[in-house]
Image (cartoon, rainbow, N blue to C red):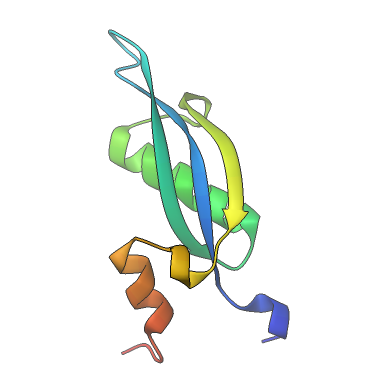
Length: 88
C-alpha cells in the first residue's frame, strides 16, 4: 500500500429531495465518510442515501466535499473506525 492510499475522512454537504412522489421538499444534509479517494466518498453517499431514503442520484445534490482532520469529526462511528488498529 502506498502512502497516498491511506483512508481519509471527508465531509460531504448537500441536499436531498424527500417525498419526491407527493410533496417534494429539499432537505440539507452533512455526512462524514471514510474513504481513500474523494470519488469513493461520493459513491458511498449516493449509495447510502439511495438505500436509506429510496432516492435516485438525481434526487441528491452534492454542494461541497472537503477532507477534514479527525479533530473536526463528530460522527462516533467514523471516529471508532479511524482508531481501529486491526480487523477482527
